[in-house]
Length: 433
Image (cartoon, rainbow, N blue to C red):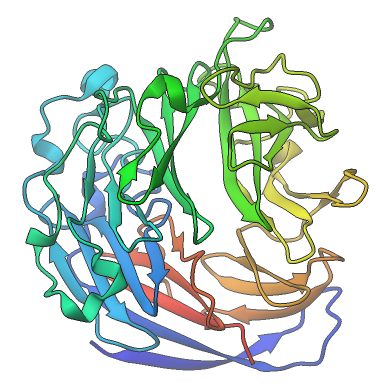
């Protein structure tokens, strides 16, 4: 494996407020065994799901589909260790039997929903969830706390459990969009369940001390699909779950049908008791996990009114900055990128057109970063849109995938994983001085 060091000049964009500087960019080869793109439906963006890059105690881990149509898990010691990659036997993507409610439309490699999601719980266990589009749960985990003492363990498939369809409770079915989240103390798994676009629930399962303490669908339900409007059902497309100073934050949009034109509204809720109860923007309780789910009828659940049919899209990126502001960057009306921001003192939301789209990362102090396949921009969290600097990436490392970002690395670098042909690489942007 070779590291390529690129010292890139930083070009100034409109509104930049700092002098021209230089930033280091490194690329490393994880493996040359990524799943060939021809297996995927043309136009699909795939292979790197939430948590596909994850850092824990000075080591970084990657997870993705490989040439053998199996999940590969790789690791390296930061900052520049050699990647070790291994393919996990026991499950091959095209040999699946139970496609669940997705049926024949989910066979083959579908349309890109079936990415590999990864997370590492605070106790050092590595968790994987993969191959989902209205399908039965696919879940594996390490049998020991491998990530707490990685040098102690030889990197072999025997470290992982067989594929499971449960979390220690009943079988979980009709799964889409798995995503793990942590604040370093708590660890949760999001699953969209019980339906597809326009008619599905949002569920959060909780892990602690080696077991899933919330492990059944009913106890984990947070957002219910039923409502009084439209065709009587919706689903929440989450921008993400974020932790900040003991509080959990959620933002999402509603979607009424499989047609993306029915996306509407920016919704917001937060929890101060580790996800048990959830409040709206005005601080009033509108949901209780497993007891009283949030719905589209919940009072005050809409933070910003956006009508359906305005080309507002599900997806996007959300962070909470160091001063507690909530930021959402996504495709807004008429397909243009738009930025929403919540003031932590007043609770007021503001919006503005954004000059760039991409994934948000919080840096130190007032720094906020927008990462895209072509560049990384630094802007002000307090004055979003005032571009401080822009680092151009000279390479097409993400042309055959949807990039994945490491949201857990905190040593002055931002890592992004991508695929070009079958080559899987990680690009590291320096953000610390």
